[in-house]
Length: 478
View 1 (cartoon, rainbow, N blue to C red):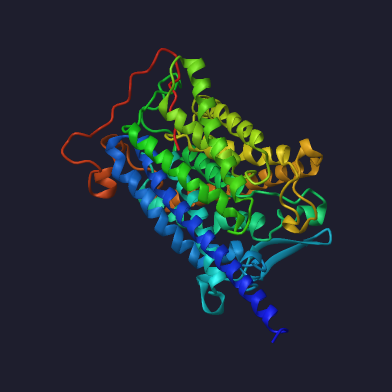
View 2 (cartoon, rainbow, N blue to C red):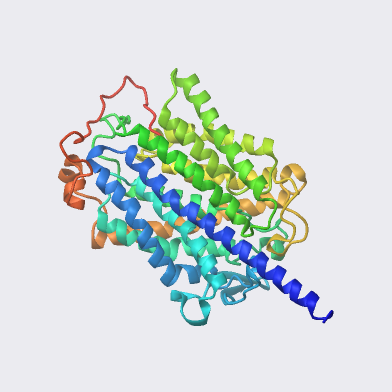
């Protein structure tokens, strides 16, 4: 009796821990799913009333497209070779990774188990991870809808979103989170703990932001965005209260995004992650306010929202690994960087991004990845990616971690740019990517969606504001 009881108690404790972890992961996933509403409100508020149904429609349907695309193909490519799920009882169902051998090391490229979640693969642990990873993927798929808003043909959007969920996102996510080659740079080549991205600066935000940049560049600017001399004109959004509410929804959901990435409700670092997330969001908003007010005399509410979102993006990689002052610094830099980047992308690169998605996600996703390599303080992450000791950045003695972060950034660009550009090029040849000029000028709600976002004639059109005297009006966003 005495020999059996301790074993039974130990098993019960282990089962309870797995249950707590499962509930925590799922609840965090529920929060991330609700971010879809935040994205829809931010993007729609920052675009014109005549396109409200179209913009909302993209943000709505991308969720459904993403679920089925990720369920059928994407999840297996991302997580099919991840190995034992340690916080979920060590479930080892997903254990088949396609690898290549380089310099005597096996480098993982994509998983090969879990397509359609059929048969014995569909365990409770796998279902939990699928749910959580799916809502992260859907965040990536949503980001391009803002940058390509007001001129993207709906059918092209549908098909391209399927490509994102099935191929573009899962492959890079495998390299970082699924046991692929970027995660093993530390174990195999001595670069820190490999490419570390706690909750998605590179996996989610860089990927989505780079896709947004390529898509907006290939579509071209909205009619009337640039004058004959090439100076951008402001095309104001129609509903600033909607933008602010959407931003708060995103900030709320971000606690699930970051804190949930512990993948363990029993991990005491959750409180550190949540607090760092909040601090960075605040400093991002404050520094955007200070910078915009100093430069233009008055704050721009949309840019304040933009600054908060940039702060949230920038802390996403390092939220578990940095001190509170470092979190404030990381978010504050993002708040300024997003303003500078918005002006550069719109004014110098001539890329029309109605909601600022490129600056918020691509630019500050990159900054967030590098910030981990600088500020990780060595208090967390022991054993991560099979490397002994905690994660440390340059300021705490490990230059190699920054090197791993840089490799991950380069890999993201070198993979996402050509694949997304090729997919959009082929879609343009098959179905066309851009709506007609006539439909764009009249509004996309009727021709693309069959109904108006607003009825009664109170919200129609959406004129371009007159060109200011050689002043670039800031347009902020998602």
